[in-house]
Length: 385
Ligand SMILES: *Cc1c(COP(=O)(O)O)cnc(C)c1O
Image 1 (cartoon, rainbow, N blue to C red):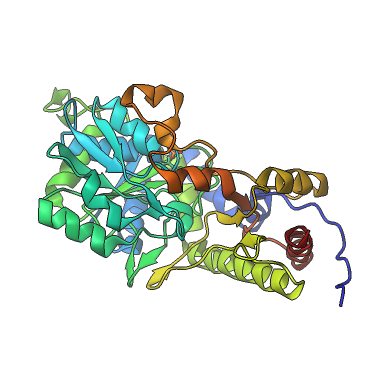
Image 2: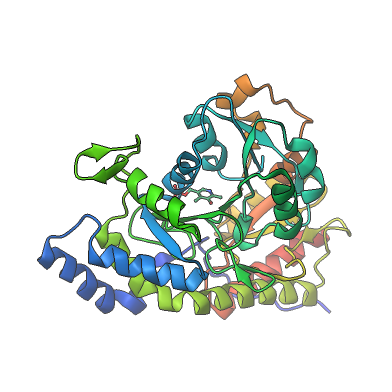
C-alpha cells in the first residue's frame, strides 16, 4: 500500500533557537550576574562548571579550555608531545584531531575505521604503533564511543597514554563508563552545534591524574605556575566565565536532550521501514547502529547511501528543504596541508568509502512529528528508486 504523502515542512539540520526559547530567562539571569560582577576570566563560575562536568563524567578533574581544539592541544602538550613523536588517530574525523598533532611538530599516524561505527578499528591499531608513538587518540565520532577495551589493552601493553577525542560525545557511555573517563585524558568541545553547546567557543579536558590536572591549569595560562613565573610554555586556552554560566544552565538538560535525539533517530528509521524503505544491503540507505555496550548520544545522525547515490540524495533533500551535511568529505590523510605526510588514495579504504557514502540528517531533540514523518517518507521513497 502506498503511504499517504506527509505534509511538506522545512526541516533544518539544527535549530538552536528552539532550545534557547526554553532557557532564555535562566540564561539571561546567569549572564547578567557575570556582567554585573565584571569578572570574565576564570573565577568561581568557571570552577563551579568544571566541578559539575567532573561529576557528570565521573572523573577527578575537569579543566575548562577555550575550545575542543585547544583541549586536545593542551592534553598533548601536557604529555610533552613534540617533534619526533607520533600520535595515532582516526583519518575520518574533524580536522582538529590531527591538526593539533601537527601544530606541536609531531606526526599524526592514522588507523583506519570500522565501517559499522566510523570509529578507529582496534584490529588495525597495533599496526599503526611505532617506537615513536607517544599517544593514542581515538575519536568518539558522532556521539558514540570507540571500542575502548581493545584500544586500552594495546595502550597498556605498550605503555602509551590515551587521549579521548570526546568532542562530539559528552554523555556517551561505554560499558557503563562515560566518554572522557576511559583514557588518560578526555577532550570536549562546547561549539554551539555540540550536544552541550555554548554561545561561542569553549572546551574542557578531563583527567583522573592530579599531576596532569595541575599541568593543564598552568598550560591554559601560558604555563604560569605563580604570577609571572613560567615553568612551561603554554597558551591562552581559558574558558570564559560567560560560556561557563550558559553551559552550566544547560547541563541539567543534556541527558534528556540526548534521549530526544535517540528517540528521533529510532523514529525516523522505524517510519522509513514502514514506508518500505530499502536498507543499505538492499541498495538503499543504511542507518547508524549502536554497537553492543554503547550509549550513543547522536550528536550527528549519519546514514550511508548505497550505489554511489549520495550526491543525488543531497540534491533531493535540498529541493525538499531538508537540512543535511557531509561529515567529512575528505579523509585527513588526503588533506592538502598534510601532503607532506605522504598519504595517498587507497591508504585507508574504509575512511575513503565513508567520505563518499555518509550523510548527516536532522536529529536535534526539538524535531516535530511532522518533520520526522516528512524526512522518513522521502528517504524511503528515494531508497526504492
Ligand atoms: C568539534 C570537534 C573538535 C574541535 O572542537 P572545537 O571546539 O570546534 O575546537 C575536535 N574534534 C572533533 C571530533 C570535533 O567534533
